[in-house]
Image 1 (cartoon, rainbow, N blue to C red):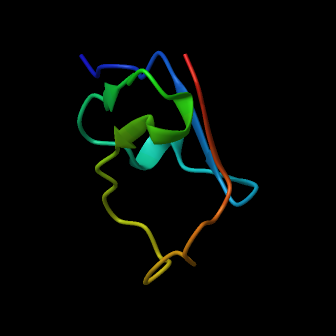
Image 2: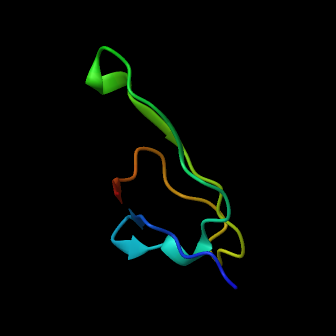
Length: 59
């Protein structure tokens, strides 16, 4: 039985939800500008992402 992601990952307007292989690791710090999140993606055709690209995660 496959495990289905319960979140959605959008990076630069493209959906990468099916490429996430581990749970999302995030930290909500006191200053919301410093919040961070780590996502492990696998088998993505894109070599690298531009710096400061817009990313959204829906839980």
